[in-house]
Length: 147
Picture (cartoon, rainbow, N blue to C red):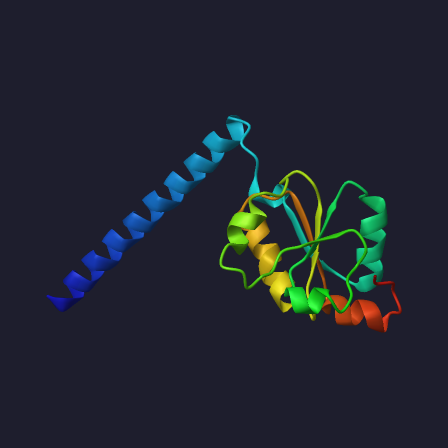
């Protein structure tokens, strides 16, 4: 009797999973046919200090986002930055003021907060987000300029 119950339960689970998979595939096909953007169109990438500097030059309409504290920013920052304190209670609201269609080059001190911010921005629908690996510390070790 136990074997029949286990077999029956396994069969029901298989059918349930199969129907979920079909539902997901159908929804994806519907979204594609309606011209909905795909998640894969978003760029969210960690880059080296040299690549970050090249992006700043190449994407002159982009946003250079510094997510350090005001005390950290006062010690020096990348020219042209916009400062938004990662620890500010309104941080997410501040991010919403940025243009989602402009490339965002984000950095912090060593890359942790900016990496988290990159993922937040990606989840918010930003099209292009680049995180400075190693943060401004790596930038400075490369001898790149700060103001």
